[in-house]
Image 1 (cartoon, rainbow, N blue to C red):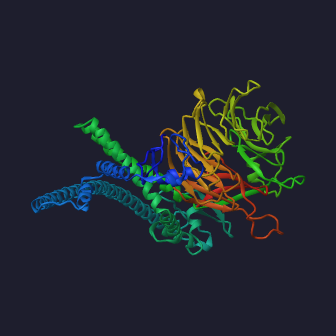
Image 2: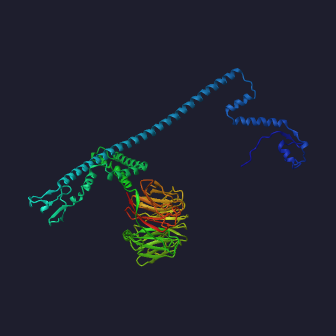
Image 3: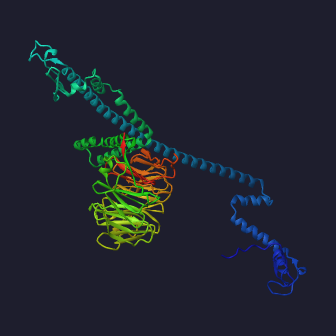
Length: 640
């Protein structure tokens, strides 16, 4: 860029006839004694002020400035120069200025009114939309309240009818003397008394009891239940007739407390489903109008949102805690660290395998672990390995085949029956964190490693079928359960990359939102993905719409792998507080949790150094397995 040219200031003339700024020529003469133009000998005492050039430069500067300044500034400049203007011109200028001022003020006021009016119209439109949405929500609530109240009245009528029938049955089952066989004899003289009864008018099975005199008395099961002053019988009847009885009221109170604890999430879930139904209604009405049959279908579909939310509410309020069924210890006397890094059920949920830093794969019979009361549970299969293990994955077709990934970067296939390795893949250059078999194509599996590579393997060949370079440490990989072509990859770059392996050059989607490394990814369904991160959150994603659906918070996870497991309704994970947390997928706060206690009596109550290291649901059941960094494995079940 060329240097800007400044006009000459304080011009001085040299003896050789050249003009320079005084500051410029004196600066030059301090270094050299010659003219900058002709190089003749020159000293400071030979400089003469050039007043003509200085005056011309000032006028030129004023001219240039007048072309750049605004008219107002130009007028002000002229007036400041002391120009003599006639009074008539001054009056004319004042009139023009006042008129111009009035127009500017009017235009500005009109502009301000337009902006204000636009703002008010937009605000009114938005509020109208909010009001319409609110009125729609109120309409949904009123209609659903009427629907639920109608159902409740039906249940109360059925309840009263059943209670009335039970009382009639109790009256009919009162003891009577059988006069057909010896009516003139007393009970103490060998008479036989018969108790008959039942529920709903049916006679219960009869049982015989011998008396001292050799006579028998036949008593119904119901009559036996109401003896002992009728205490059991009274409770049985009251449990149906009294809606405020303790047996009914306590669970109701607990459920209401759970609802209030997450009221906002539940309300959001309800409104989201009801609005979705309303949108579908409007869409169908636009497509098909004036059709009574279609209107009938729409009336039926209107309740789908309520039924959908009802299923969520029932699932959420069904459980409030995790109950311990049994526990076992994965500890090894020869290893000081007993962290269980992975727990996996087999194809049929009959056996589960554990692996960790103890360099052993242990397979347990689940029914034996649950039913045996022994203090020590021995594995049915134990396979020693060369390295510490990070992950396990059972084959979804071959029951005896299980894959493992280890700290040396080796992915190994094992035959549990023979306790031998079937195949070893050694292409990873650093620790392999994750391995997973495909559900739809059991011969395919995928692994991820700290070397930044995701590798797809086939059990029928010795080298990888596909390799993806992610350029970031890979923490987890998972096949979509509905497709062998789609995988989810979680990495240290804080993102989840979703690939179609048929075109794996770039991911289909990149799910962003976690603030730290993604440690686990699990598919709730072919369209729902759950992820865990060391930012202490779980996030749920829609892999079809490429969007985040919910963020779950409550557990603590900042540096360790604490496990993640999902089923169709619940998401469970570990915590660095040595607790297991269970979330319903529609709620952002935990529905239940359980704290592991220290097994060593010498340990202090503060076991903050321990953390949950692996969790696993038993398919679609309320039962799960959880292990912590001490090697303790617990069988937990969701309970009310």
